[in-house]
Image (cartoon, rainbow, N blue to C red):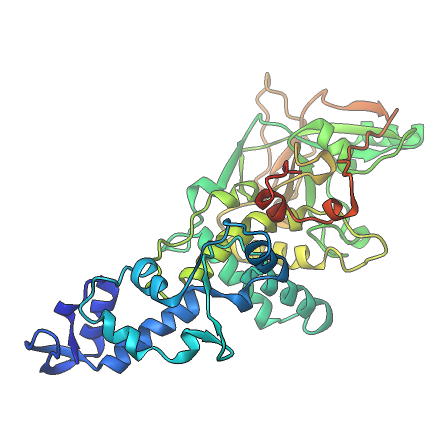
Length: 417
């Protein structure tokens, strides 16, 4: 038996307080709340299982880096070091007994090779949330596209870290676009008549596509009409994927009051809950922090060739965020991959994708209807002839670099892409 006074880590002390019974401690002899050593030791080993990576959690490439190339990017230690140094239990009075209690599976792999444990800050190739993301995509593509509890549970886990205790979005993630600030829309206009129609009625022609004509887009499926904009005029020209020789008309919009947007470009700044290696979910939170950085890129990728379901995952995410945070924000901000993520896109929820018939002129006082969330800025139309499409590419010397992940490039000290 062991009492809380003979235990240093606070979380382990709480285990004794919650599950202990009054008895004599085998270490200090005091009569106090105590817990059986086998229960206490098993709890510690469960934390090792959940919060420390083993050989099964590393890719063949990572194992090759460690054992064949001698890489030290991933720390490797045996269970005694893990418990004494990683968990900082080396000076505990029960440490020797804990080591004696260890099942052989923690010491030997397959009963022969020494078992090793590896540092895992979420940057291992086998990320827990990357695997969950793939299952999420497979589920909505091939299993339950609608009323999918597994998808909802996954998205709750991912986006739960964006909120505070009261379920309000963290302030750093909300960007306010005020009246007078500019958003840009563009439309192809191959003929004079089409361009003239846009010029004569920009609030209609630059507005959201009518529901009966709305096709499947990055964030919205067919039949759902939302307004896609950009923070830069050049970005909206790129996003409509015009080709050389196309004619394009662009215009500026501004909020009639203000718009609040969930800024997905700032997700990587969000810190997960402060957990220690003694907390259940510690390793999971590290993986989530790493995954959230890559998720925005996944959501910003263009549609794959001949893949009608490419946008399905982002459409589900958009609908989830719309239902979850509609009372707090009016839409999303996400990077434009068409500009190499230099430009920024905006998509507004259908409920606020309403453009006034009146023009906005900063020098005039114009009254807008309550439902009018945006207005076309007076004299903001521009008429473009696309003369060239610039293709940017990174050149590699061999095929392996072409398919190498950014994580591996970092470990090999190669320039980032």
